[in-house]
Length: 158
Picture (cartoon, one colour):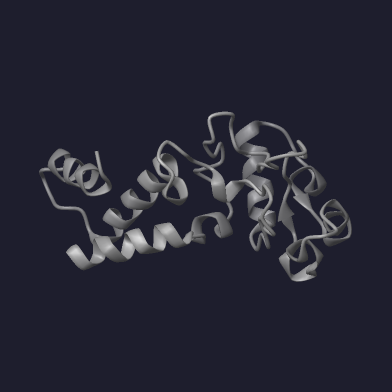
């Protein structure tokens, strides 16, 4: 099923009233990010994985709120250093990547230092965000180029 078929089915399921443009965009974002991430079928979590890219998940502008929400969700108090990298620590992780050397990109979400993919610590084994309902603003606002193009195409059709 393609993205537009998915949205059409959602519209049928909500036969009482048609979704707003914002709801349709949100559905498209959810569908794309969980099933066609970066345009790759059956892929999710690419934006939450550093890999070989010069990429950092930061700056986290709502770090206090996120830290509080993670603690509440997981039922124990977490420290800043368990969730985030500070500039002092983070710049040492990837000394050859410019995004990690820029203090304006901090605090940044910690990644799993697995020597290969470097996923966000909150990405599950099946590449789903385990903090979807409380994720930081930067995660909500991020739109990869593929997603931007998909949104533009959908809005042209509306």
